Image (cartoon, rainbow, N blue to C red):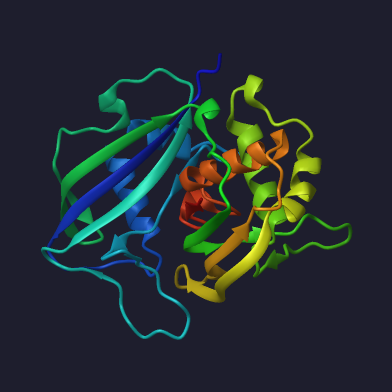
Length: 275
């Protein structure tokens, strides 16, 4: 039996003062987690292609706080307003609850010039063998933060190439690599290349509302990704082991995200099954 835990932490807080924050607010989420979680500090410091950590931008009133190229607004924490974010940690190590989330201080100071008061922390723990859905008629995948879907490497090309449409094989490829890197050995998905290409036939695009966005990450870097949602029709797909693997990966995506730079706030998604 496996012993890896996939842990989702959802934090809600209230700003205690006004403060200007970075144009990509996942930096605030990461700073708060560094203050709250020793487990997060250890895992986020690992050097790995598929880190066992993901984090979301801040959400205010249901929308992510990110700044898109061309916008003139300044992102701020406003005194008395409520914000939330989530993070996922994957680990097989033993730890105490205090190492996962420290409740010694309910108020955290010096958060980009403000203080925040932690209002609630919700923790959810999953095992790898728990992921998956009963076969739906369709799946709606929504991007909560822009996704960076990288095409496979090409001989002679030195720069990365990103797609602005969530082709199923790109989604599933990023997920199966993350899964096999971080899961228990007995849960490895065998023949991931077959599953990646099969997903283009199992997940049929039925509708979508997508747009490319150029996000201002900091003073020097602009990052271009895809946002919106896509509806995949599964009615013609047989309920085979391969399809069940794909559904498990889509469920997993709600915790770890999709694409590149999940540890810094990109590629956060939600899934809605339609039966």
